[in-house]
Amino acid sequence: MRLLSVRGVLDRESDITKGTEDTFRSTVVEELDDTTTDYAMLSHRWSNKEVNYSEMVKLTSMSMEKRDGVGGREGYNKILEGCEQAVKDGLERLWFDTCCIDKRRSSVLSEAINSMYQWYYSTKCYAHLHDFTESTFPNKPDKKTYGNCNGRPEWFSWGWTLQELIAPKEVQFFNKDWVPLGNKRTLAFKLAKTTRIPLPVLKVPSPGLVLCGPNYVMGCRPEDNSSRRPGIFLVGIIRREYADALWRGRESISTTTVGNHPWV
Image 1 (cartoon, rainbow, N blue to C red):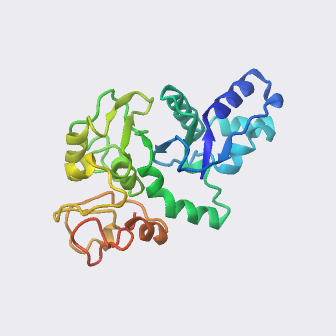
Image 2: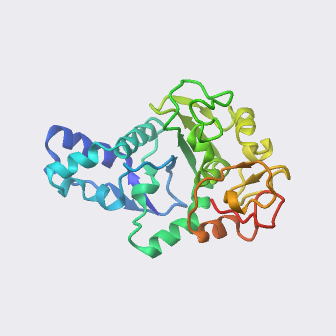
Image 3: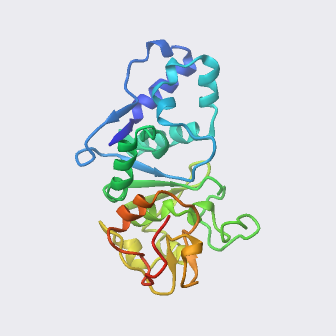
């Protein structure tokens, strides 16, 4: 898998700030064996201001105007903040989906889609709540602020983030400014209340998704929710092979199977 070199990213940014980027020679994105490398993964909601693989590896060779444009994006700052958190945790590598997958190559994209759940299961995850500014984890829905997301930060409404909560052994939550809010263990009861995912699923990571209770549907498209039961993580539609790879033969992580293939 491709991983960011935390030190390489931060050293390059330091050189750019000092105007000495021409002397930068370190590698920023590396191809490494995920089974023998310690790393963290970032879970976040995409914006229209992310940084892709090509931009990340070619930043210092861009014109100053273009480089400043990339460096001024919300997504670039998210990368720097994630790398700084990894340094605090004593980690040298970070996986960030927007810039660690070369989406121009279909084989690379397919491998990432098929491997992603295992990647998350094998490491710790940083969950960045980009629209949450408080310093403590939300205790109750706030329809006024998050009217389009069932009263919760957007991270809790998007299908991509379902596996990123269930799979990892450790999930650390951060607010918009990267203030720590707690982790999956300390917040287990609040997370169960927020997501309706049973506590055992949150407390014991599984190498494959497990069945949840029969009263809720998770991870399928709203229009495919034939049971009409309450849903969670139902927003967003991506490639079908992702769902196929993720569920490995199960139609849904709920016990309702008809019409609930887990599009996420």
